Every structure is written in structure tokens, then in C-alpha cells.
Image (cartoon, rainbow, N blue to C red; front, side, top):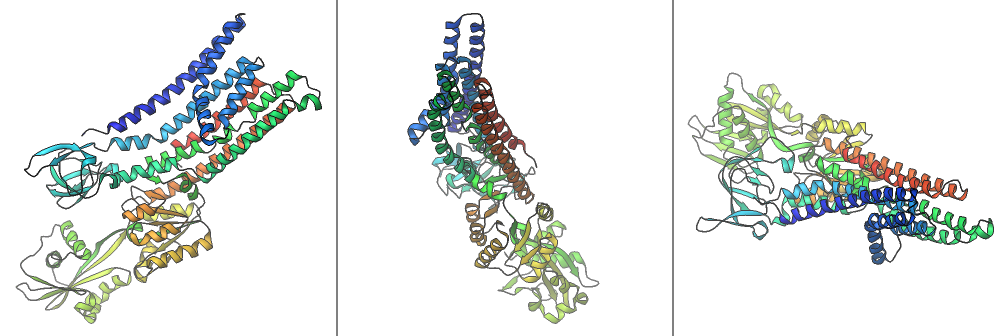
Length: 635
């Protein structure tokens, strides 16, 4: 399938912009070197002409950006301060210093563009996975290649081996294996058959299938992932918003101070006019908050990109920042700490009976029901390679169980109450009901001689859940589980997962009240869930975190999404957030220290314009490079 032309154009545009800024900065540097050499050889006019060209080439991008922002916001900014400083340096004859200022400013601008482009890398690669065209099946059985965005819900599509699934939908004909790594990060393909769900952007590996479109392209899971990352990259954190508000006021203060410096020192300290003007220009350079402004955004963008690469999607810088402040994490049980699908953990038969025969009978009965427990028993029989018996009709007793009439006599399958509490208690000296005490659900099979077999089922813990909880505890977070399940099951899962505390039998509003109570107790609290019933609590918590397999409502409500459904990524996301906060603090303190140091040194006349330029712009480049460390942060 062809990929999006629009995406290709965007990618080309981004590459062009990245390279042109870097080329202009390098060309400016070459011209400055040529101008300096010309000046040393006495060709002053040539030297000045080369410096002017270096000014124009190196400063064009930043000057254009500064002028456009000033017109749009009706407020001066850092870029305009740099333009004034460079022009002021040239006016007093310091052509080289002004040109070097422009050159380093251009280099820092190219670095910022590089950071932005790196942060968009994950989005670009995701968008390239979206097919632009699909094979539409017409009513006469023929196929037609049409744009994906022209399709409507209900459209029947043909997908051949090796092609990407164009839209979200379900299989209507055929069977295949699907590479789901673009969605869940798993390298092992998933087998898909009739009525199984398909997601746009995944790859059909083997068979030819016909599918039915179930969601508009704009609402596909893949598109939601892209939208979430795009929103995260455009949304600014509270720290960044504060710095930007501070920048506007600070620029006015600097310009006012420089205006005073143009006259006051001459009359108060007796400086000559050249020194007074020179020191005012140096102040304009060193007091500009370039490094402070660049302290946060590059680190935030790099962290968002890092998270996206590892399957953690942040819906904005504010949510990334909030994660670092969490003191407690609340987990939903079903589908979050557990897989959300019951499995058979124990299968017991009465003494002398054949386990395979009993399982064949029970699974054969349960195979006629669509109950999740019935599906789990049937799957267990398939695992054990036991053939199902089907030589009977069944009758479903709503809320109780199933009744079958094979040739050997009537049998029933269901709860202890349905088969008889006393017989269930007596079966194998109470071993089956003991499993029930451990939080499992037990299905009994009874024939004319009494209880024949019992299957114990449980919604098992995710393989990584206990390790994820341990990691969070190491990070100093309190772990809590909230579930609508009964006390016994909740206790068993909580003990297995290792959470610090739990509350059972929670309704959605109970979860909200509990989250509010925990926020009063612990301050910032995160909530991890996957279902519609978790959405209110996700919205209430400081940080709402959804599993990637969660419902649409949970995905929409959450602030962070674990796309690979790997709970260990939660601890990684918190470490990533905390590291970002450390880097931001380092950058802010370092940039403020350099600004104060250079301003004091200027008043004491111990720093000249060249050193001021290097100190100021050098600090800007250093904080950007420090922020870029987040791109490869692994701890």
C-alpha cells in the first residue's frame, strides 16, 4: 500500500528546515573566519562586508522568528534582544563579536530545531505506517483501489498477505497471522480468525482475508495514538508556561536597564561615552535569558519522544511533569493488574475417574455456552489436547449452570449451590471449596453418582504485575488496589501482586471517593485502569494512566497510556519524569547563575564583549545539550 503523500511532504519539509538552519549557521561561521583573516591582512572594507553577510545569513532565521513573534504577540522577545545586541556591537565597531554572537545564536537555534525534529521522529514513523489506499470489494465481487479516508463504516475490504490493515475492523472471511508490533510492541504475530478484531497499521502476514470496517479512519486506535503524541508535543508544561510568561516581563526589564545604562554610568561613575555604550551592549548580551528559555522545552520534547519510543504516551508536558510528583499509585484489578480473562488453574476429579474423560464431558457441555468461564474451560481442554464430547443436548439454567443428558444419564455443571452445597463441601474432603476460599471461582460437574469433577478458575495476575509493583515501591510510592470483586478474590490478588493495601467491592463512584481520600492522605496520586468504570477515577486522580488495551473511554480520559500493556513501563515513565525534572532544575539553576555572574562581571568591567558572547551563548548550547540527554534516558 502507498503511504501518505502528506506525511512524505511533511517529512521532506522537516528535513529541509533542519538542514538549512545548520547550513546557514556553518556558512556564517566560515564567513566570520574569512572576515577575521581579511581584517588581519589589512583589508578592512572586505572584512566588514564579509561580517555583514555573516550577520544576514546566520541571523536570518532567528531574526525572522523574533520579528514574526513580536508582531503576533505585540511583545518583544529573546530573539529581538539578540538582534539588538548584534547590531549594537557592530555600531561601536565590534563587528567580530557581533558576528560571533549571531553565529552561536544560529547554532543554538539549529540545535533547538534538531530537538524538535527528533521529538517528531516517532510521529513520522507512525504516520508512515498508515496505508493511504485500501482494496474495496464491490457488490459484483471485483475490487477497487480507493483512498482510505473515503471509506465508510461497513465497507468490505480485501487485504492480501504482506499488506497493512488499512482501517479498524473485523474479519468476515479467512484466517491469518497479524504482526501487531505497531500497536502492542509484541514481536510474536497474533492468529486471527472470523470475527476477530483488526487494527489499522498492523500487517497481514500470511492469508488473504476479507474484513469489514467498524470505525472511521479518524477514530482508529492507530490514529488515536498519533493524535495523543501530537497533542503531547504541542502542549506545554506548567514550568514552560511560567518561563514564557517570565520571558516577556524580563525582556522589558532588560531593555529598560540597558536604556538607563546608556547614560547613567557616564554621569554617576564618570565612564566615558564609549565605555558606557560598550557596557550597555555587553549587558544586553549577557542579561538575555536565552539559556533560561531553553531550559525546559528541549528536555520535555525529548522525554515525550523517549516515552513514545518505548510505548508510553504522554498527552502533554503537564502530565509528564505530574508523574514526578506522585506519592501513591492506585490500580484497578481486572484488566490492569490481572489479564482480565479467567483461566483454569486446577482441575480435580473424584478418585478412580479419568481426568481426560471428565474434562471432555465438562468442556463439551461448556462449549455450548458463551459465558467467559465456559470459554476458559473449553480453552483449557484445547490446551490439554482433549477432544470435546458433543453427543448430547444441553439446557442452560440462567444464573445457575448447565444441564446435559448424555447416554449415561443426566449431568449438571455449575456453582456449588446448583450442584448442592453439602456435596460440593464433601468433594475430595473439601479441597475444591478450599480453592474457593483462595479467591478462585469453582465450577462443579455432577453426574448420577455425585460430584465427578471441579474446575477452579481465576483471573490471573499479569506476568509483570508483581515486578512492576516492586519497582514502584523501590521508587518510594505507596501501592493500592481497588476492585469491584469480592473480598476473598481481592485479598488473593493483592497478596500475589504485593500491593500495600486494597479495597474490595468498589463501584465506580466508590473508586472516585477512595481516590479523593487517598489524595488527601498522600497528595499526588496516580490511577491505573482500563475500563469504562475506571474513567471517573482516572479523571479524578492527579495522573490518570490507561492500559493500551483499555476501553475508548479510558483511553480518552487518561493522561498517560501504556500502549504495550506492560505495567513495568509505569515505573520507567516515573523515572523518566523524575530525571526530566532533575535536568530542568539543573538547566534553570545553571542558566540563572551564568546570567547573574556575567551581569556582575560586566558592572565590574572584568568581562568584555567576546567573553560575554561566549559565556551567554555557550550556556544556551549547554542547557539544550543537557536536555537532549532525555532522548536516550533509560533510567
